[in-house]
Image: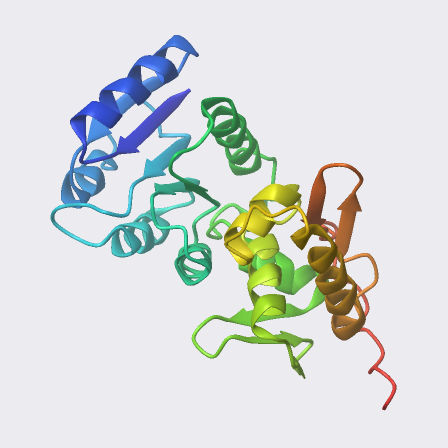
Length: 249
């Protein structure tokens, strides 16, 4: 599998290339955004299956590079960055990133995510859809259940119905929405949303999940994976029916 690694830190890149090569990847390393875009020009060796994109590049913003990659074709993009804030995650996914991994990461998890997005990128499609750009995570969620997030205004809408959320409820929903279908561990949620490792926060998490389910009124949108965490469930085959408006009071 051919992979493009965009990383300006040579030490980080060397370690990644060594591991990825050991696992059967053919890796090209680009140190800048412009070098990465130049690498996408067809060279007769076949397309890249995945792009691993760092956001902190020396010549241009990684978000801009992601947008350029998406406009050039449907190569899956995984952002691999130290930027862990929710708004950066949402912005990256809305630009078309297929996944978002925060440094430091577990190498086994990164490999699993690479294979997952590569499978999605090569899934058979009807001939009429071949020229369409790859669907983003935000688009898949919207198509499936009508949920849209507006990170600038920190608003959530379900089928254009404004859903009033508290700050923590929005952050929790945004974290789950960054990787639909992927189980987010309870410890990770508590760390990123509450900035805490205190076990007592676990009950607070359960309360917030229950509140989100009630406010969103989308059946089975947030699934509990017992003993592990939660995931956002989307219907890949078609759009769910719009939920009934919540009762007053």
